[in-house]
Figure 1: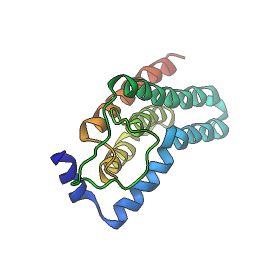
Figure 2 (figure 1 turned 30 degrees about the vertical axis):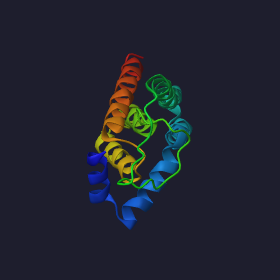
Figure 3 (figure 1 turned 180 degrees about the vertical axis):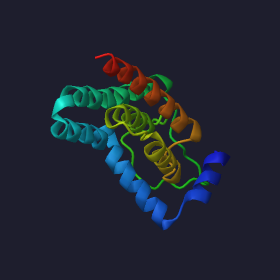
Figure 4 (figure 1 turned 120 degrees about the vertical axis):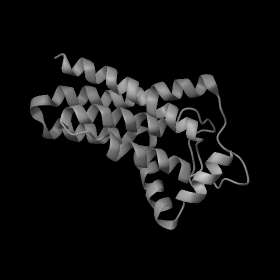
Length: 161
């Protein structure tokens, strides 16, 4: 709990809380990342099927994180030293579904855009979950690892086409 409280204390400001809430809403249930995949499919007609597979992969990564949450059943942070700054759809914390779907999207969409999106997309989402006080650091790291594995496996299959 001390690491989360310290991270929130260092990272939290009016600007970061507002940005973190925006990221939270965008990433909820992987909806924003899924929508971007659909946009990619609409714009890049040559690789429409790849974009749709990637978008489905993002949703699949999110589903995998929900399955792990239900097995692990780790409760979200609940301590006076941590301020919870956004509502959540469940009381379960491990792994972070936002971190999972964001990392999967970054890996998959990097392969389709030819740009490494991971450094630009993943750290802000991971930090946002700490700023908002809804995840422990290990939750976001595990979510990023799960999303990276799922995204990497699907990306490898897309490359083989």
